[in-house]
Amino acid sequence: MPTLQPIKTNLLKPLLLASGLSGVLFYFSTGFYDNWLLTWLASLPVCFYALQSRAGGAALAAFTAYVLGAMNQFGYLPPLLFVGTTMLSAAAFSTSILLLRSLTLANRQIFAPFAFAASWTSFEFVRSLISSFGTFDSLAYTQVYNLPIIQLASLSGIWGITFLLMLIPACLAVVWRYR
Image (cartoon, rainbow, N blue to C red; front, side, top):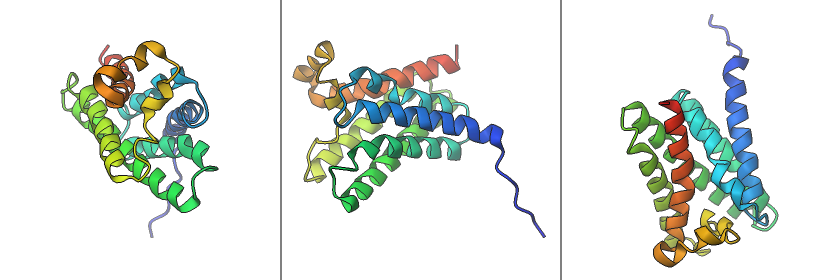
């Protein structure tokens, strides 16, 4: 009879560290907080982790990080709406992370960060068209107090800001992996 194997703590610690750190960074850089610098770092731990782990672990880390970061919205959204939008966004973030991982590991290192940023930006754009809240939940709004970056909105709209917020951490993770 097969026995259940305990979860190896050496595999669990990096996952918890990456998702926890990204979750805390997302939490304190979105919602009512105005720590715009943290938004630039928020996806970095999950990007690092995704490039050195299995696909399932990367998806779980990304999903968990997004859910933890979205907990700052729990108080001002109705519970059912909060759960639905958070799960959908967490799934999209996980998919974007898996795209980064798969392209990087398939020797498409130059293209991978751009695909990751484009994937998340596309999700935010489509969500803004479908949602009755419009662009309410866009990461670009975290940069309101970052005057040099917010000027980019005059050229590209909020989508250019969101793209950069995802592109820079993904580039750093890929460069670090192939240093």
